[in-house]
Picture 1 (cartoon, rainbow, N blue to C red):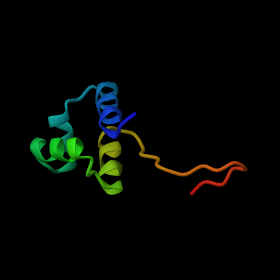
Picture 2 (cartoon, rainbow, N blue to C red; picture 1 turned 60 degrees about the vertical axis):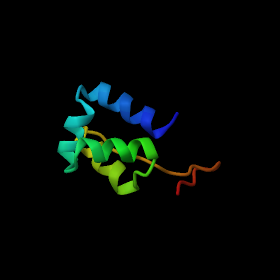
Picture 3 (cartoon, rainbow, N blue to C red; picture 1 turned 135 degrees about the vertical axis):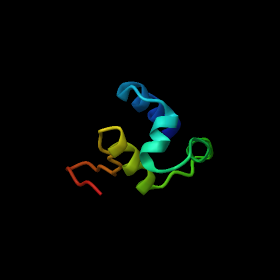
Length: 69
């Protein structure tokens, strides 16, 4: 699943539009759309998006034995 698909699913779950998300994270709808389409969102962007949606972004590596990086 792509980041774009995950964001669209999260927006649907939260019941808000992409334009409203852009406003909540302090950017323009056009800028957010371009970042999503070009796949240039940073970890910081993803954390802001998750917070704006009332969630938490968890990107990690998980290895056998329980090690998480």
